[in-house]
Amino acid sequence: MSHHEFAAIILAAGKGTRMKSALHKVLHPIAGRPMLKHLMASVEALGPKKQVVVVGAGREQVEGALGDTAETCLQEPQLGTGHAVQQAQERLAGFKGDVLVLYGDVPFVRGETMQAMLDRLHAEDAPKVVVLGFEPDDALAYGRVIADDAGRIAKMVEFKDASEDERSCRLCNSGLMAARAEDMFALLDRVGNDNVQGEYYLPDIVNIAISDGDVCAAVTTADPGEVAGINSRGELAAAEALWQAEQRAHWMAEGVTLRAPETVFFSWDTQLGRDVTIDPNVVFGPGVTVADGAHIKSFSHLEGASVGEKAQVGPYARLRPGAVMAKDSFVGNFVEMKNAHLGEGAKASHLTYLGDAEVGARANIGAGTITCNYDGYFKYRTVIGEGAFIGSNSALIAPVRIGRDAIVAAGSAVTSDVADGDLRMVRGEQIVKPGWADRFHDAMRKKKAAKKD
Image 1 (cartoon, rainbow, N blue to C red):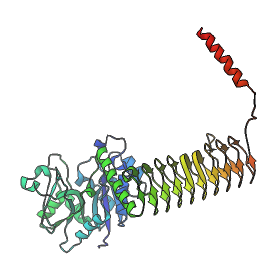
Image 2: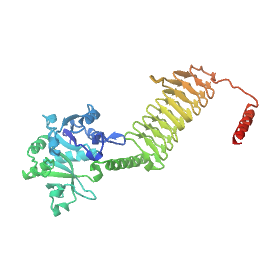
Image 3: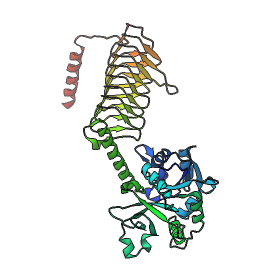
Image 4: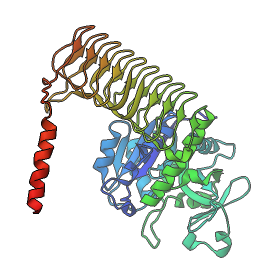
């Protein structure tokens, strides 16, 4: 494996008009993460010296999403892929290593494939340019790579310029390339735009090098899906489906039970322990970890949450960011947690909102309990002690603290702290009027009958 320095140039200047979107194409998410970030994470794992993203239309969005994780350069006007790569030359001034050209809308190229391209660049025949080829089921209108069995390229040809014989060639050009920096930019300086589009095509550097008598080589990926570009909402959905299918297979192989795998949706960073069971129709947003033996029941939605060992969630539960469930804790149907900690063995079985709350071990939260955490301006915390029992339909008006083993009677609105072991009952006085209802019904029935007459 070569350990030569390399830089990645990622092309993301295109408008992406087929998306019909105000959001830049490369920022459309797959599994909750922008496609550009999926690609950059794979590059990052190989330890690049630099990543330069070539931006154009919608550059502010892309630059905003990147922050300081990569440098950008502007391609304006957009005169083709060769021209786009040239724009990064200034950012790589003085860089002597290899350059890998990638595309922001081709997010699933594996690190191993990128490494294979860089390794091929340093093979004995020292090719000037390495091209990533693929063999799709249907070669359609892709440009062709005419190469021998050793991968040495005779010619690169655009589909519309290819002969019948060349079109019958199965090896297609993915657009991804690798070359040493000085070769890449020297060759690009010689690319012309004498074509129908009046653009400077990156693949032309291969034909120029070959005409110089230099070797260029192709590396072929075994998986055509790896180089699939995403240009439309349909292709975005297909990429999502492919990614989800791979994740489901991965987690089942790791010891997770998925009862209806095709109905469970993971985020790019979901982490699951062993013997986790996930029932049908569960959605994971970003930032979720689930410990060994936990059970996530149907129609639950989790985001930014941590679920402890053997904890149970749902069905129909919602865990929002900052929700932490300790070992053996339980939330049932229509329970929502946000920025709240449910202690070991604690339960909220139904119809409850726990926001900005700390619930002690073994506490029992009755149906319809609400932590009233917000006054329209600020958020306040509720602390519930170990073993406390909160009766159904209670409103805990924060900031408030309920003591250890305390009991809050059903239907109470609690505004001040409850001491350990106390009972708090906040209810209006119950008034009884014997026979009143019977007399009321009689009077009303007579009135109704009189109206009919």
